[in-house]
Every structure is written in C-alpha cells, then in structure tokens.
Amino acid sequence: MVTRTRFDDSECPVARSVDAIGDWWSLLIVRDAFDGSRRFGEFQRSLGVAKNILTARLRALVAGGVLESVPASDGSAYREYVLTAKGKELFPVIVALRQWGERNFFAPGEPHSELVDGDNGQRLRPLEVVAADGRRLHPDDTAVHKVRPASDN
Image 1 (cartoon, rainbow, N blue to C red):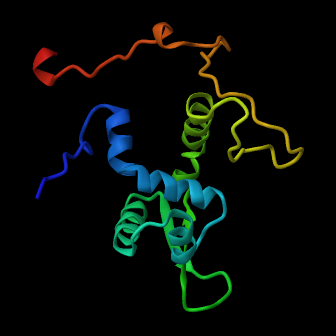
Image 2 (tube, rainbow, N blue to C red; image 1 turned 60 degrees about the horizontal axis):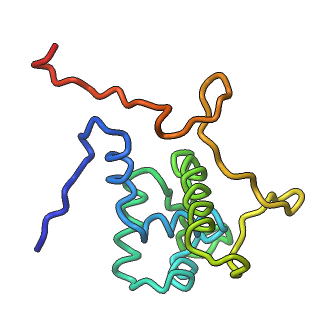
C-alpha cells in the first residue's frame, strides 16, 4: 500500500490547504454542502461515491474542522454535516474552481450549472486577485517570501 505524503507541517499554505482538503471528493462534498446537502444520503446521491469513500472523506473533513456533524434538524436520529466557519471560508475556492472550469472546459453555448446572485439571479463577476490598494494582480505581479531554514538565520 502506498503511503500518502503529508504536508500538514509544511511552511507552504497551499500545501497545508491541499493536505486538509485531501482530494477531489472532498472538494465536491464541500461544493454540495454549499448547495444545501446535509445528510450522508444526499451527498451519496449527488456524488455517486462509494459509501466507504464518502464515510472516510466526511470523517476527514470533520476532523479537519471543515464540516461539523450535528443532530438532524428534523429531530430524527440521523446526523447532518454542516460547514463550519473554516469550511465557509472555502467559498472563494469553490467559486474560483467553478469559474475556471466554465472558462476552460465548456464549449461556447454548452449548458452547465451556474452560480448566481441569490438576490437578483445575475451571474457573478469573475473573481480577481487585488492588491491592498485595489490594483488587479496577475501572477507576474506577485512574489512568495519563503521561510528560511533556521540554519540560514
């Protein structure tokens, strides 16, 4: 069995984030949670994922503080999964993936689901990365300040 490389102690925020989310199933679970899914069966029907995989991903998302398992809102014996504050902070990530997918994986005019403003039904503006002063930034406009090893100090 292949051991999964862990990045939970990496100095890179991207690596730690990927480590916390884990894989595409986890991102799709988070997407479905934003879309209103709360119960195991709802996630399974939407995703068509095997029960054992879904169970493992839900447990990992709960352990990572992205989802919380709570008593069912209807008072039944079931449990529901709700996004935590940490999980809700993934909203821009899901929107960015959606917008990237719309631009790159659909032919012009090809039907696909759309995320719209709940108040007026309008499509969202494309996400932008902006500087503190409001300028739009592109990859060449940024730099990563890496952590230097203690031996270099």
